[in-house]
Length: 253
Image (cartoon, rainbow, N blue to C red; front, side, top):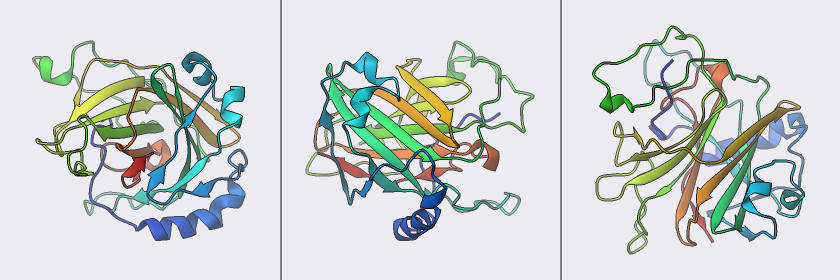
């Protein structure tokens, strides 16, 4: 299995088209029926009374007090003729943000008709770049449902945000990645093809019920003014690496 490392590839379908598709598919979302509102280009983070540990539970009462913010997803285009075509089956993700205990808690919910969380071998302890040779997997036909949040590593200067395609050398990004099969890992990148695992895990939890994923991620404190971007991978569509659903940058208020 190729681990989904690249967070952004070429921008495909427009956000407007994704929103229209999202409206058509809304009736299918059994567990995502809260009154979500389009976010525009900004996101609101609520100050939560609950502790960070408690909010890692998607069913925590504290989340019910925070309205979801609906974000349109784009679908990456086909990059190779041999690549199977895919549809915009997941048109949007609902996001709740909460600040507590000096952390930013992120709760992502999206409709997915299939649960792809196959048991696969754990990642080796040392990062790929630190091993003398690559270790191949026999699970070449299994891909996991996954999600990620990306933000700039450094404070934006003069309103300059990093490239959505994994940042750039002068403006790197941090990525909080969660896999239904392998759990959570923090990564860093400074441009396409430069993503590296930091060796750091972070608190995260994912639950699948009623054909929807409910994933909570505990990020370090992200100050207001930073942008956030989100991504979702659908294992049944053989998503991995840059083949995924993704959002544009959204400013955190």
